[in-house]
Image (cartoon, rainbow, N blue to C red; front, side):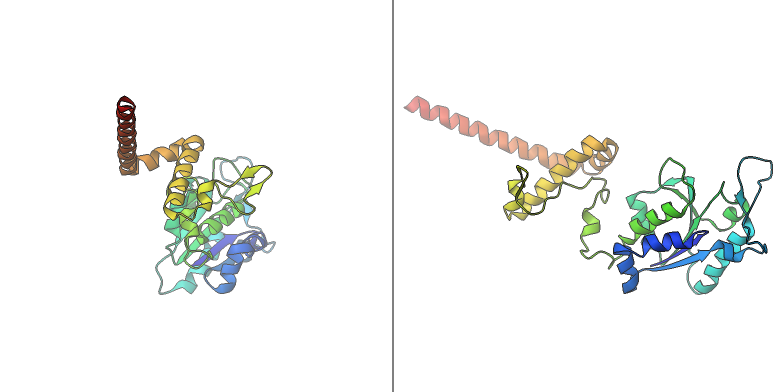
Length: 265
């Protein structure tokens, strides 16, 4: 997968993305990162890329021409491929989430546009942008940090990026549920022990324990996600009800047998 980022601060993104998992993925050629400095495409001799907004108002606005020419510098090298999606990181966009990361990971090329100042001239946004995306209901200085968040999250969904291919499938939000608690060595630390079931070697019971803990954690911390999961997994609750009914019946039979034995004695 190829990320193309249009930004005024390429060094900021370069330092953040070329480390850890994403950095190793770039070195292996699993993903690629192209950073395009919008300032390189201004026609102003002083390298100016912003101006006052028409109608007045606070702050400066990024001009259309340098943004558009930076965009063209990327697309001219993508001839023969489908026109890539262009993501504009903006607070008015759809909120980024795990399912969106999974969806974007299927793209061959992704162009991410980072705004700055008070934003970007609407005319160029109308011309090139396909998706407005926000990482939350707050305002940042520019789109670089949100772009790094998106690149990291999307990259994790690209095959070959994670060392364990199952990792991306079991992390929080992968199926609406928050991740279950995790434990490592030693078995006891500071008076706290690892749950016995995780030491049992019984994979079925471990999987059941993890799902139960995920459900409990999600219900407590993110009831909105819990409701979504529950709506799509009614069969799970039906199986749970049948299991509980069998346990009650078994216990009732045990009690009856115990009472019968006591009468005999």
